[in-house]
Length: 420
Ligand code: GLU
Image (cartoon, rainbow, N blue to C red; front, side):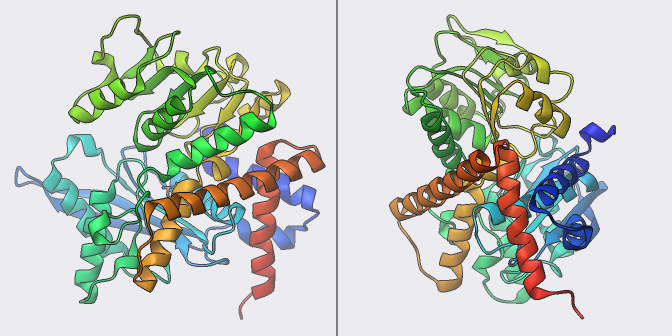
């Protein structure tokens, strides 16, 4: 992997940049650069055909300085230690920028869920949960869904952990089914947070939302929720994509129809979606469309040195984690593209995870209206703080977000001091 595409190198670069602006010495910042704890596990599974397969899994805690580690579990064939490390570090800074009392962690299993049966996915989930059980718990490290995992999988994780401990422990994971203590509003929370962020940045730049063309890369949970909410706000979603490719309609796509088509059958892919005036383009072409807003809502490194020059969007709101490499970010800044960084833009998911955990440990439940109001409040205040600091320091929004986040993490570490 070249350095540009190593996501952990990209995290270190922005942390170094923020630390230099904050005037921190190497001593202040050194320990922030190393994950606190890394666990690699083997996950043996009896497959449906009777064979045994061993999957590779990870749980990495980047930081617990501000509170328990928090972050999702990814099931994807490309999961690897540097990716999980980066995803864990982004969680640390994400929780810090929105000021919720967590550190950051992430986990993953190298597998392709689209090639596994439900029984096999459940077996992977249960054995993986048992393998990482020594690290997780409501006061230590709280997993949640990420790419390739779902509320159903979180329900199995919660059940497995509870069975091992001998009693029901709701607060060990978030993003669970509502019947198991999942928060109302959690499944749409990341997309809702992205929508709130889009409204905030358009307002700051004095651009009305109505009819502004938007391209969204990825129609998983986050991409499809974002598409639906921005469509409801009157924006014109001209292109969306999934793993099979992208669809494009200059007059605007019918998002409710596309969402219904994709949810109708798990095997439905956009490459087979045929409607009048809708043409098929590549995922690569989607990123380079002449739009007001580009929302990358898929995986890391999508905007890189190879395509950053050709990006025509005026505004990018990062719904995915790490969609822009550090080199590409520099090019976008030169081109004066306004980029709202992942750690701020996609924080809605972990914010509502925090609400879920707070409800679980107190055995209370909040209405969806309360959840959504509290989410909006945190997203608005965090955006405002990042915007104000970025303007004051004359730096891009990503740097502004890291100035706030890195300071909060270093302040917590300093207050605790090095043990022993
Ligand atoms: N996987 C999500 C993220 O990257 C949510 C994490 C969580 O809720 O803990 O932010």
